Image 1 (cartoon, rainbow, N blue to C red):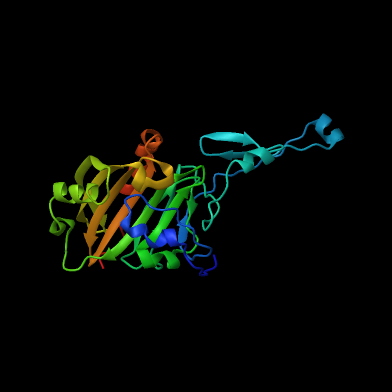
Image 2: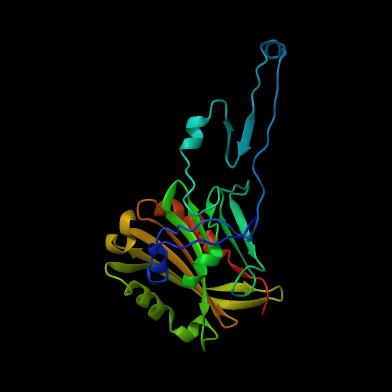
Length: 262
């Protein structure tokens, strides 16, 4: 892939301060490595009657179902790639994986993101607000996943930021009409030697004023401090779609791994 640069919209400059990310609209290009398996296979078959008629059928198989794409113009029109994002990427497992082992401001890491979603094209522009990776559901732009990396200062662990209750409360109090709906501690794998880092997970419901045009929404963040950096993995969805999105977005947040001890 090519790398490029373009100006960010005003909405992106305020992204780091919001509990639910604004729509990231950044123009192409990126050198991030997205390893995934394409779920597309094709087969063509004809019988004697088809040969005489000269007709052909092409079948594409994807995650969870097969779609007959004969006269599929209406099908394609349903999915519009968000501005500043690459086209959707698909995997038969239901999840793509980003390996950020070179193009990152922190330690090398990996994180899963949902199949059928779009990846931000030009990450370098987004780094001014701490965004190291961003993904969006083209069918529902309120459903997002992003990796934020910032300097941790003197903190060596997320516990140095305070207790889980304190951190959860601070996120709820960061904007009006917000409240916690879940919180817990867990461990994040670091490297291959069995090292782990403490992670706080905080789930917060956000009111319409903060969530903007998407109305009320829910965000789930996983916060880990390691090697002088804070890694915040944030997933969001509208309140109405959260029940069906929660399981896979939680999996994505929990999939974050730091690949080296750095």
